[in-house]
Length: 196
Image (tube, rainbow, N blue to C red; front, side):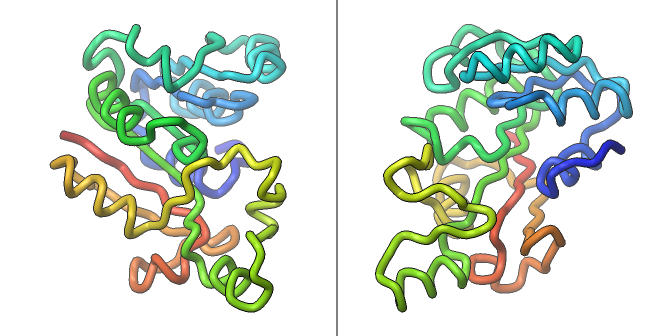
């Protein structure tokens, strides 16, 4: 498997070979390229940033420029095996609606996000009284694309309220997986595999 960011490596390891995949907020296409080359997936993408769309097209990837908040409605029901949203949920206007759209479009959905209840984030707020800037959240509050700060427990509650099934969950501290025990406190990032 290509060298991938840790949450993307978890997703790639758990996508079945030969699957149809839609990567929403695909960035420069690193995950799509790995799925296409290493798992023979039919990987498609949607990306808001035109420069990243250009990078994807330069890699021979099938990507359109689009906004997850508006353009997912144009995809047919159950048109892919996996809809993927990595490190993007917290940047959308209506994360709950985007999540519903992912599960309408895909038979399953992978969602990864930064956990804003991680102990370093809590410590930064407690001792410094300021929004954290960390290795994994490197942008100051006034420039961050993160508009909905969520925690592992917030996400678990949302999927429970919506009757969404959690098929798998992985928690990352730094670049390594950690146990689910106290994940809301210990995990910097979370990855969930969801279905209806």
